[in-house]
Image (tube, rainbow, N blue to C red; front, side, top):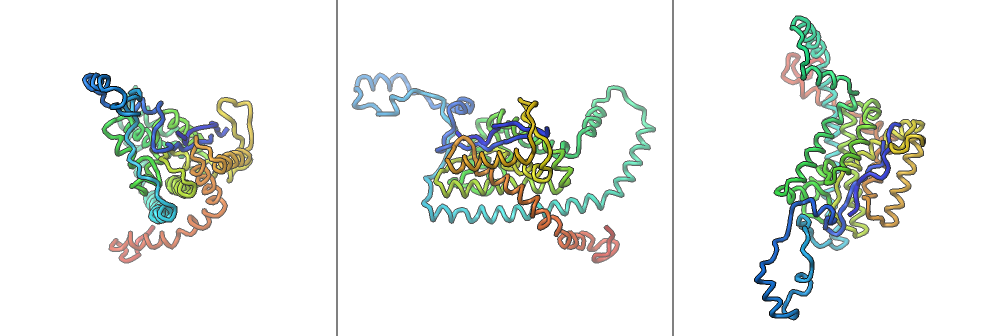
Length: 372
């Protein structure tokens, strides 16, 4: 099995995270033992019949094989022929373009609505503070302590808390045997699967191994403050979600071109984009390996090393990591900082004006007459 898992944990002063893929449509035995699926043992009578009939009448391989915990049943079709395989990528391509456009469009609307309600929220906060002074203070108020902890987090950490919670929920769903057929179908991405589009997004929140999830979430948490302060909450989420789909599409293309089909899952494609945006925007920032904090290096060198390693893995056919998804995420992050921000985010004004007209139509100012 090839993991999109963690090879090196970096921090400001964050990490090379990876997506994992399962080769040949089978899960490794170490994971099979955790799935809770077992083959039904044969009855003793059948074994005695086999002994009496002799080896010539027994099943050649199935009877001789030792009984092990089996993997979740992977309903994978035979890999399609090359022309047909590439034609199957048309729907994922349309989904990638459409989802990316919708992500940035919704992010622009969200930012507009947040700015529009800032004045009202300001007065609400003043009133809340005034009522809080009149209300008698409670000692040991657990809710108040939670609020204080939440306010102590940076905006980036508060932003990725929801992402981490979603990943943890999906991780728990993998532990439910009755859900595993649906989890394999919708939360693991494979270009040879019947379901192509929805796993491109859902696999970004999917981890089967706890260490895999913990490593990815640690890196996301480590880089969240810098990334969100640089892009803003709305733009960051649009980039993160788009990166998950784009990196999966790059993985689809490479698997189809090489014929190495197999499912993969993990948040590392999107996290590689976050890492690449920070390293491209702040190339002189210092990073270190969590287990070797005495060794520091620049963010630019770290990004070059990660891209070089994943390029070598893709060319040489290394199967432990989904190197195509890593490269897709990293290159998208570099492209977005150098060109995408100007091309997409800074040209959102016509769309926001259109939304403003639709938003205020029928309001106090009539068509387009409402104030921002």
